[in-house]
Image (cartoon, rainbow, N blue to C red; front, side, top):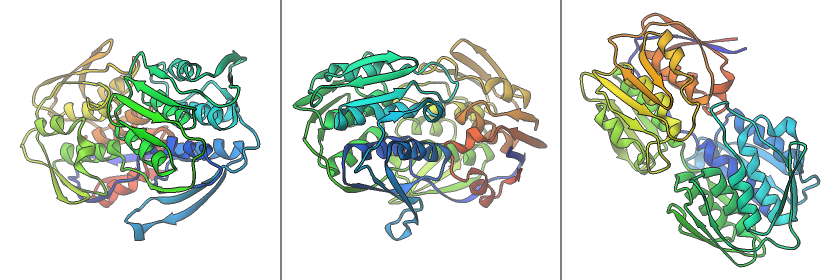
Length: 428
């Protein structure tokens, strides 16, 4: 099993090309189900979750073609062409769905286009419960009949889904995406209240509109969708991964280096730019799609955060920010409000010399003068990268095990860090 061996103490300097957002790509791939014409996606990241979704869609009968990097279009990601002209099998089996929670996203598009779907209850990271009830309640609101049978969601509708007003009990990115896609082919108008506002929602709506959908309000808490009978072919460039960009920004800050992030715009830092700056980092837009990040303070300043849906501090940046705070000049309180089991990285950071106490959904981080290399184990996607960040500044060597978590969401992370001067060996 692949591992990383990292020797800390190197300041990072160089350019990092930011990949397309994994969390935007997954629903965009699923959106191909909504049309019998081809959907072309560019700036597609090369990460394990994309392969998992591709296998799931291929099992349904979607034809998928992958081309090399579309550098002529300014993209460094791959080009993916999806053709769902004929869905031969509207069933998503457990052995594919269990690998990734985002698999539930196929439910709405299958219902909207074919009137039936059978999807296994999903799996994925063990970072707390991610109930699919918001997805199911939204589909029922649109007129679907839902049954849970032997671990599967069996859904059907007579004719087309019907537009409705959907009031989400809590903000959910996945449920917003799922309902947004389903409502695009529903009869009449659908209004989503308490909708998620993340950039990935905006990107999905932009692609759907390019396919012929009629969506307004994406990026706000109320989205309106006027259903259409048919969607058509489109070409769409995937938005840059704000979480990857934020991760490398913290890598620059924690090592005291200077890194230029290529392919990303400042608005994507909206949920956490202020916190990074308070910690002593400077973010400068040096060109249309390039941001320079460096630490301008001698010490890393302690900053307390609380995770919230966009435009709040993202839960997917919490572990990375905690690593930054382990080297701060004071005490930082980190509150996790999205998932109830997302502090699994705490004990691994403590093994490296961090001073962290966790109480329920709150962690108190007291900055230390140094971290020390140790053998640690990745527990989920963001936890694994938090240990990479800590290892970059730790004395001695850190060995990070169970690297498959990291590869689910980061494209060539070790290689990108090595190109900026990090001392990393990839062990097989």
